[in-house]
Image 1: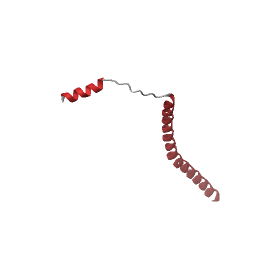
Image 2: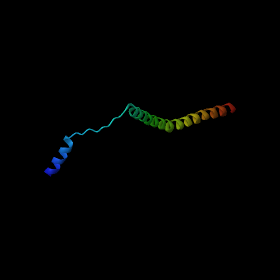
Image 3: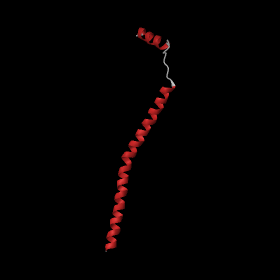
Image 4: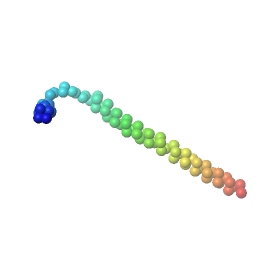
Length: 74
């Protein structure tokens, strides 16, 4: 038990250089991916909600026209 705690603390306390560099191109790609993700979510919601609402409004308009035509005939 004590050896494992000593071993874990030894590796947590020693910092080694990682030699990693994230350049401006990588950050631009991350920003573009985030914007793309939000755009995909918004477009999915638009596609799911827009067409049923459009169809309902068209059906409502068609009913009004049919009612108007039936009232004009009588």
